[in-house]
Image 1 (spheres, rainbow, N blue to C red):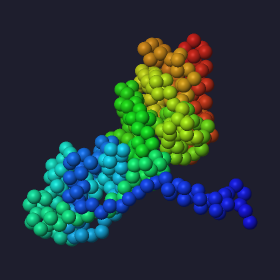
Image 2 (cartoon, rainbow, N blue to C red):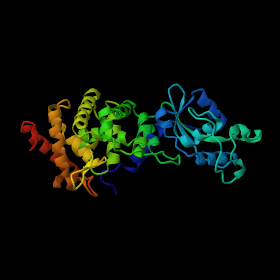
Image 3 (tube, rainbow, N blue to C red):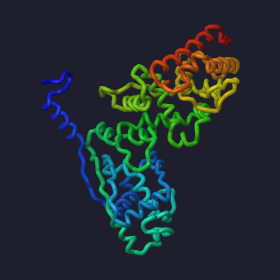
Length: 381
């Protein structure tokens, strides 16, 4: 009995085997001292964007060092081998960084002094240099399994493998994980997103994003969402995270690959800059804020206001002039009116508003109102 649309068993097995062969791996058992030497000689690299994610508390770092001293089993780390033979760390950041911190080798850090060790409490208060020599040697010789994805492995399969790895004990945000893994496909689009997140007009519009959200790179995720919704909205269903990840992957695939999404960097940068110059001039820090029942601004960044406003003005972006105070003043009044419109509120407030239907409703409402205003010679209705 055959299954419609499915490969025959033999074909399926052959397909799986062909993919397995495209990832060349090797396993090594390396001592922590070897890893430290490799790090100091730049043979083991922690990408700057990745290293900033080191966030284990000193308590967790100390307990990890205690585990090493007690010879407890620890999970492997994962690296990729570059064309130059350098190992790039992808998974295992918290563990490796904790060891380097304790040894005083972690860049921009001092020595870790152990705290809150709860098995051998006598370790508390020690730095590496203060430990008995026997324990120093034990730490140096303690080894860890290193899984190496070797050069020559299929680039896309390396990416998909590491996309599934997040085993360091600290969950990354969706955008942090994208930043760490997308570079296995291509760095250009990721660097582009990071660059635009530093645009002064964009940053002014995102003033009310919390410090925690900035730390989790949510501002960069908003930049990515802008391009994904603007350029690929027809493929959006309801899950925003998977949608924007797929878009980022599509742009990052090499031209000629089936899933590649063309992206004109110069043109898209100009559109982004113009969009946020207009929104900064007209609404400023309240570009994506809600308006309460008394007509006052609520200091916030609403995701539904973000997509509605940024995309709703796109058909008229060339007609809007951020340097025209009168026009920007009228646009301020109009967008504030829209934010209080009952249909707009229905499409933006409450749960379940991430559907394609509600997304299109709120964008269309902004489009129509802005279009009516501009056709009326730029005067508010």
